[in-house]
Image (cartoon, rainbow, N blue to C red; front, side):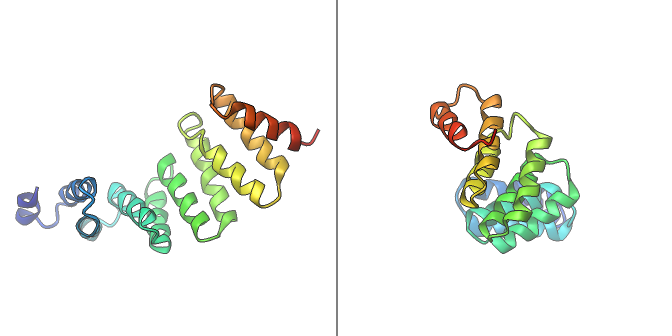
Length: 164
């Protein structure tokens, strides 16, 4: 892989693959440098922006994560993963209202695959004292994951907090 980028330093796909290889080896600094090289070569390359944003999110570099994941969502607005990760990054910097829009978009784009996002939204609503909205999120989750190991606990919450 190194030979590819040495032969063609503008090969954004090779840089992205190299970044992912470093990421899998927990070589985060090298992964970051590789993803940045990919983005430098092709700023609109979705996968490099997404992966670097995910890396920053994992490293708790939330402002940088928001920047990269915002770029990823602009490049590919129909990516449920990018929307979910951007929502999570906004949650981490205490911008819940921005987070909710992206988390809901992730659910809209991939209702089954992103069912767990309902749980994240429920926690957010519960913490904000919006227990009826939290109950609705738990209900939506259980419709998609009726075999959840937490089913009884969630049903009890719904029963206690859902407005008639």
